[in-house]
Image 1 (cartoon, rainbow, N blue to C red):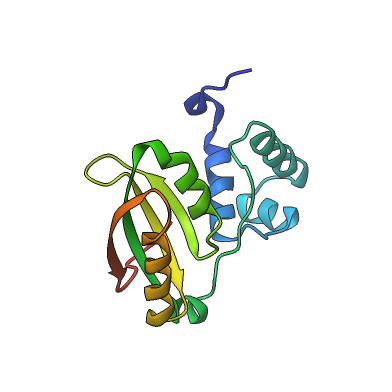
Image 2: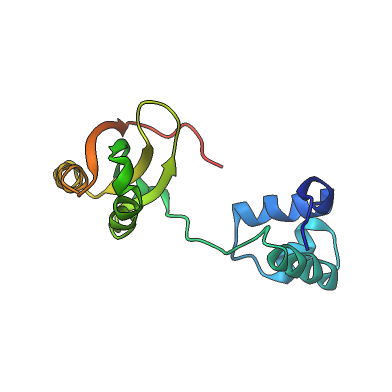
Length: 149
């Protein structure tokens, strides 16, 4: 069955998703209290969102103390087209790549890289640049996160 997302997600579902974005570990009781809904309603809506694929999983959000010590960078990557799949698989194996996006423009992908030091970031950038299929990279170190949703 195909869902039309604009019709599938109600205002109550949007509110539930918003609260989960702030605290994905909130209990059903906490969610019900915060949203002024019954526990049964919250459980049912949550189950519907999971089954329909709107919610695919839950993740760990790092604390500011930990994040404040990380060095993050956006790494633009130009890939040899015939080796795109192989390069994607190799990049997926690097634990320090938090996300990888296909993009339009001069570069083919942008990786979000997180390291514990500038030295480690430098090593990771060398490792990415040396992967089979990578033609060139361009990096921008993130100095400060203004906000993130």
